[in-house]
Amino acid sequence: MTQTHGLHSALLKRLRSNIRLKVVLLLTLPVVVTVAYLGVQREIIFPVHKVPLTWLDRAVPFQPRWIWAYLSLYLLNPIGPLFTRSRQDLLRYARGILFLFASGFVCFVFLPVVGPRPLSADSYWLYQRLIGIDRPYNSFPSLHAGCAAYAVLFAAYSSLDTSRRTLRTYLITVAWIWVAIILYSTIATRQHFFIDLPGGVLLGWLAHRLLVVKRAAVTEVAVVTDGEAA
Image (cartoon, rainbow, N blue to C red; front, side):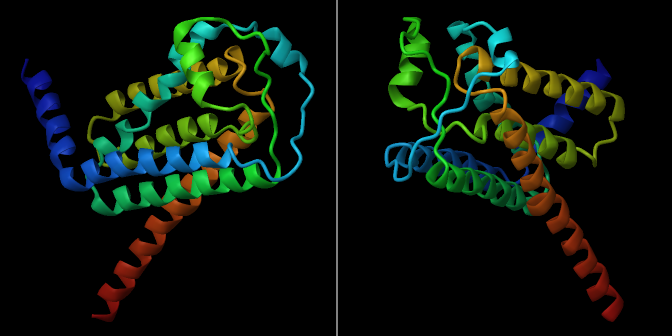
């Protein structure tokens, strides 16, 4: 009972830290990237490319009800920043997300790839809502895959300061399983080709590496250097 109370207290303390900045980021970032995402796919400037299906694409049947797993990304994304203590890490998270989407948008503009969505799509209501909004031209790289990988990488990084190592390992493992389910759903719903996924994951890793890990390392070196100079 005491351990459970202590865990709840620790999580609540993490959640409350820098709460104003968290609210601002979680309210503004999704709006900015969604508006830009929808705008990019409605202004196709360069010729649209088609990618042939691989055996991996054919191995996964079209399952529109996997749309629930596909959309679960929007529950996974905010977990890392919500339970982050550091204000600087929150800002690094925001820069990484913006880098991730901006890089994806450049690919969408100059190399538009039409996704594998079937012409006679299923009538499942939630799937129909999605394809009514999301056009099939932002296929490569998969920003869904990139955001999922980035979310877990950031959560793993921002939770390094916890004393509950076993619990952290368990939760990060569960999160990676969640990512695998999301990746599967991108193919099952025919939102992406399999080849879109490695590119997206790589982009998510690059955003985390350059805008979170390396930025933090540079900041730490600067602080140490200033301390030595003083």
